[in-house]
Image 1 (cartoon, chains in turn red, purple):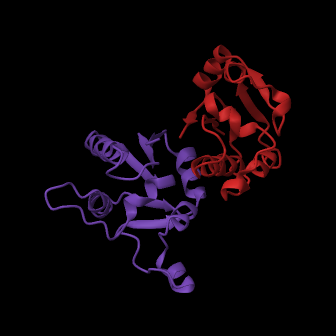
Image 2 (cartoon, chains in turn cyan, purple):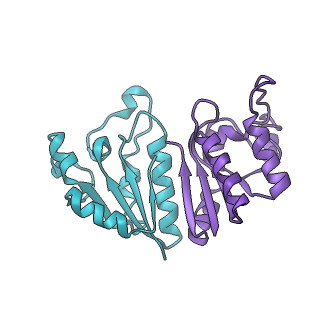
Image 3 (tube, one colour):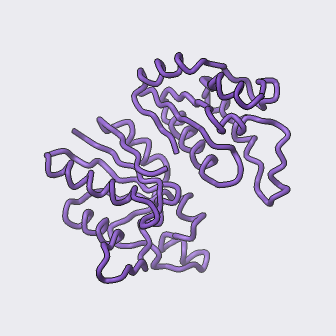
Amino acid sequence: MKTLVFIIDKPLHGNIQTQEFIDMALMAAAFDQRVILLFEDDGVYALLGKQSPDAIGLKNSSPLLKALSIYEINDVWVEQESIIERGLNSEQFVIDVKRCPRVELKREMEAADELFSF
Amino acid sequence: MKISIQINASPYQYQAADSAWHFIQAAIASGHQIYRVFFYHDGVYNAVHDSRPPGDERDIVKRWSSLHEEQGVDLVVCVSSAQRRGLLETSVARKVGGYENALANGFRIAGLGLLMEAVIDADRHICFGA
C-alpha cells in the first residue's frame, strides 16, 4: 500500500479540474491505497458550504466531498495558515477536516510515496 | 526503474507534453522502462487524430504515436476526461453517432483504474502539467 497525498489548491467550481482531480483520489481509495486529501491556498474555498454553482450553470460538486468518507478517505487535512489568511473558519466547511500547521504538513508530505497536484 | 508518466495539460499551449516527451526519451536512453503514459484533464488533447501543425513545427501527436510504434509505450487516455472533451472511442462514437476517428494511432481509451495500477506498480510516478 502506498501513501498518496492529493493537494487541492484551487476552488471547487469554475473549471472541471478540481472535480476530475477528486475522482483520481476516489479511485486511489478504491484501490486500497492510503489517501490523504490536503486543501491549501485557494483550495480551502472548495470546502465552503452554501455555494450556488447553479447560478453560473455548473453542477454542485460539494456532494463529492461528502462521498469521501464512503470511500474511507478519512485523512482530510487543511492547512491552517490558508484558512487564517482568508478569514475562514472550519465551521463554514461542509465536511469535518483536520487543521494542520504548514510545518507539520511538510513532514507528512516528505513521508508520502507520491504527491499529486494540478 | 519502472517509470509511470501522467500528462495533465494540452499540447502546444503548455510545455508539459514537450517536457514529458523529452524526459521519456532520456529515460529510455538511460535504460529505464516507461510503464505507461496516462493522459488526464486537458492532456487528452495530446491524442487528437486530426491535429495538423504547420510542416516546420514539431508534431506532438505524431511524436506520441511513434513512441508507441517504436518503443511499445502504452498510451492511455482517460475515458471520462476524453468524452467530456469530445474525444470518443470508435465503438462509443458509433453508438452515440459521434466522430469515429477522433483518436490518433497508438492511443487507447480506458479508466482511471489504469492510472492507479501504474501509480502502484511503478517505482516512480511523474506528473507533467498544471
